[in-house]
Image (tube, rainbow, N blue to C red):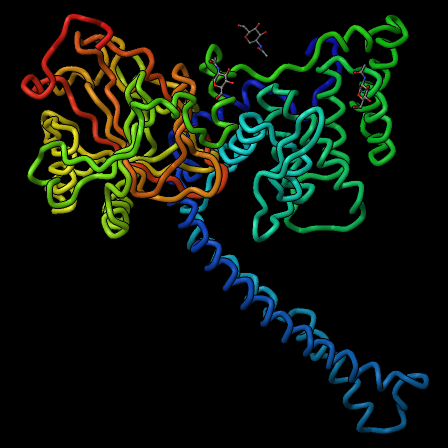
Length: 547
Ligand SMILES: *[C@@H]1O[C@H](CO)[C@@H](O)[C@H](O)[C@H]1NC(C)=O
Ligand SMILES: *[C@@H]1O[C@H](CO)[C@@H](O)[C@H](O)[C@H]1NC(C)=O
Ligand SMILES: *[C@@H]1O[C@H](CO)[C@@H](O)[C@H](O)[C@H]1NC(C)=O
């Protein structure tokens, strides 16, 4: 930091490096990236809760026995102590002093009780979430805050409200308010701070400071942060954001609580000096409005977020006479018996929604089959595949041989689309479960480079996408077609179908799409990607790029 003010938290970069390295060692990581894993965490806490309940019961018994002893001895000390003339009382006094007090003070029961509690914890310890999980969850809340313009103060009170300059709109009224503690807000602020993201650290630390101020002096065993620390981090965030006078005020407040902190005193002196040398330092900073950190897909960010905020719009061209709902048999014998409810959602690109494509029973079975195999989803990264912040979910591949339901789906998809949906002409069924704030930022399903790992099956590019919604989502999680300017809400048991390639084999730019972050719910989808080869008779090639 040179001669600048000292930051709380010590060295920044070495710490970050060390954390990302640990990430690869921890087997149970990525819990936050799927709601199915979060569900397992509920069971883990249930076990811990049971141990703590037992502990409290045993300690309560132990303390009530101690109180009995205390009251017994105290009674004999009333009115000036035990009358020493009484040989019985004299005897019990001596006995107490020689052994009873020793037994009370050196009782091993407290130790045994705490030991049992610790052993219960050790049993589940290796499965508990890692720091990266909590960090991932904190980032998820910040993502929801950004994408849906949610207000931090509302979030901290368990409310999902959108703030605009003029008013606030409640998006969702949860049945149970989950109010965040000062320490919860402090942790989120600190995650942002560690990324040098003061745009987010300031509002969350503000929230933490105001809550810590409100409960100052009340000790909470579970907390990691404190008012002093939150003030320290907040002051430094304001300093980094260029608001020196506020950094100074907060540091002065902090020094009141922590008068021996030399670093704080030096920071205060430094801030005073900056303001003395350049009284307009703050005004200059006002120009430099805090900016949101950049995302991977910056160019399409505003379009994408606008579409997510509609929470699933109908496309504007919906009124078009070509678009309608119909019962479709696709002239296929399979469908003559049970026609599909087909809704054309968009003409360019052509996006079709098949209602009730699967039954509740099939949806449940597919989720159940996939659950044990869920792993963090990857994205194509050059010639390889990698995990990425812009795709937060877990997925599993289901072979058609795993269960007749999966094979039936292939047959049904083939009937509906007229394409060959059986491997190797299509990929295995990919089942995806999104995590906290789980999303998939704008992307193409088809490969945009010849080097893509998608070509490994030697069946060409991904011609078409067939995506089945296996669950209901209470809020968020729409599928947004960024360039086509519409988003389609999650409709349980329905399937969305679109062509990724033009007839001439080139990718259709209009299919750029995204999975908006899930706000409330566990979003499950199953994807079937149909490849070019094997479809020659079903979709003849064309030369026109328009087709
Ligand atoms: C500094 O922050 C405080 C508290 O948020 C605010 O009232 C003040 O206007 C800010 N000053 C500048 C110059 O941005
Ligand atoms: C984000 O990227 C834009 C354009 O590349 C740049 O002007 C802006 O300063 C960046 N913002 C941040 C916070 O890095
Ligand atoms: C997208 O559609 C909305 C209405 O649904 C419209 O207000 C907006 O102007 C459109 N945006 C673009 C870029 O076409």
